[in-house]
Image (cartoon, rainbow, N blue to C red; front, top):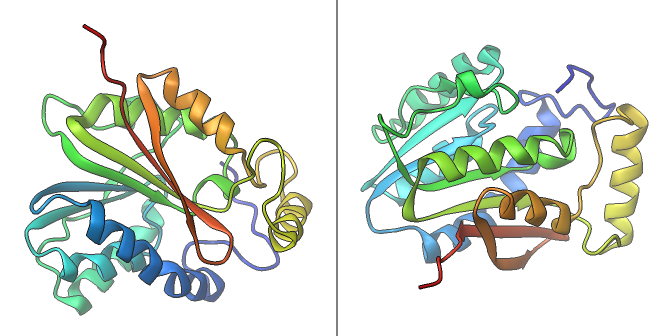
Length: 219
């Protein structure tokens, strides 16, 4: 991923990203309340400033949350938010670069009940889906799931005029990597690594929550 910033400033610590995160955090939380296990371990990919993980944590006191990001420059913000919120169940952030397998977590050391990523794909190349799926295939528990939230196209089509305008805005800033991805392309990457799309939930403001689980082997 490049360091190019949109004029709406999609840098993780920008005021725009903070506003967007606060707008979508409650609909996401409502889904997680239905899907999260009573206890366990959760990994967030591309944590950014930590606004989501630190908002969710108090609602799940028996779950341990692991923030991560490729940009170590955001770690201080994640730690500060964790301290300000007094979230004892949010661990120290770790470095994970979705394009570099050597940075990925080791299943021999830890496995997760849930992995989630929020508003990642529209500011990353579609190749990042392969990294996300490989990590999920590697460190998800057998009964675990991967949740991906954000705006997506479906079967090559925009789902709303506002999404089309947003896509054009993103591509004007970074034509090679940014822009809305298609659910089917993400689903294809998942299948390549033994994961299947189990739920495609429509959320407010023309966003989706995509839920993936391990493909069930046939006896």
